Image 1 (cartoon, rainbow, N blue to C red):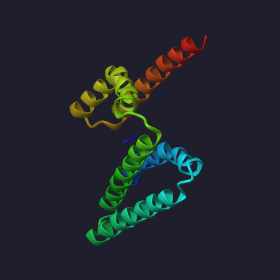
Image 2 (image 1 turned 45 degrees about the vertical axis):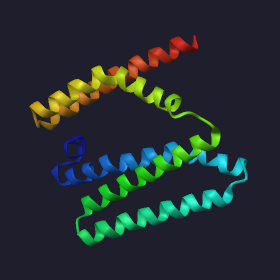
Image 3 (image 1 turned 135 degrees about the vertical axis):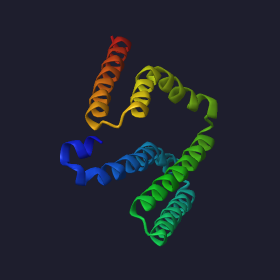
Length: 159
């Protein structure tokens, strides 16, 4: 809604694309730095296999979506397929480095619980109205509150 509000109604579909591509970008940016572990441990062959799997899954999702004939569905398939591959890659890195799943999953779960008071009003307003200005305004307000509380926590931990 924010994209169409700022750029006009003809940009609404772009906002949907951006929403899904954010999942792909997040999964890619989260796992890419971890690939250095394969170089450090001299496992370049394993990294090459992972890259081929990623390429094949991405190409397959684009092909299936293209055959389906809907651009939005193609982007959704690509992003979900890529995110699943990245999740598998992250699990492989965790296994190689000896990290336990519980320890790695603990932080995002704690952060999700901390952000619940900000996420729940957003979900509620989304169900109650479809007014883009109200939804966008609430989103920006909640984002500001969340950023301020997180910044305060970071500064308190540092000082």
